[in-house]
Image (cartoon, rainbow, N blue to C red):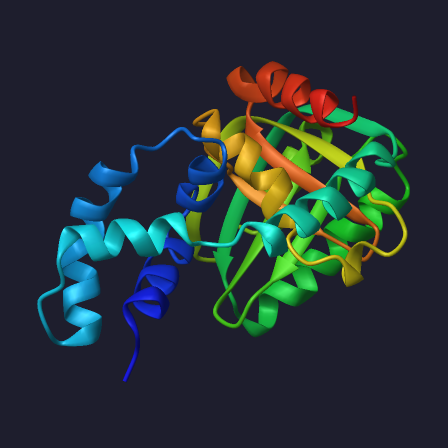
Length: 218
């Protein structure tokens, strides 16, 4: 059987932004207690008084989060260069046997063009392709018989060089993406390799996205 403290902790920590806002004194504890009271009652299978929930909220320990945030801040200060690209297109196709052959063709063309940009992410049921303007004609030529699921134009990307050890730091990606979520910037795609992270957004959002990421390095 869970205690009130455990029920409150699990409820608060599974809700984005609440824990950080609490530690920054941005949330009224009394109001939060009333909001999460139904969920706490459900977890404990009994009615709990608001006062008890408030006490549990006030006892939440920030030590773990503060330690993680401190480590992440060290990482963000050592982020590498940002590379910005504009005039990108995003295509998502249904996976087929022929699709891989067509992708191989366009990758070969991209390999011989230093100005081109292409990323390919293959999932179980679909494949996503983000390309720069010079490669668009080849998409139309090679993928004529493939099933197009989704297409977005007028996109831009920022590629971030990640510091060594990023795979061992919990919460690193969350810390970056949280800043963009707070700014209400919708992400079109997130593409990552071991030491690089590429964020694709609409062109109208690229300046704000760049400013937010640059601010993280200061």
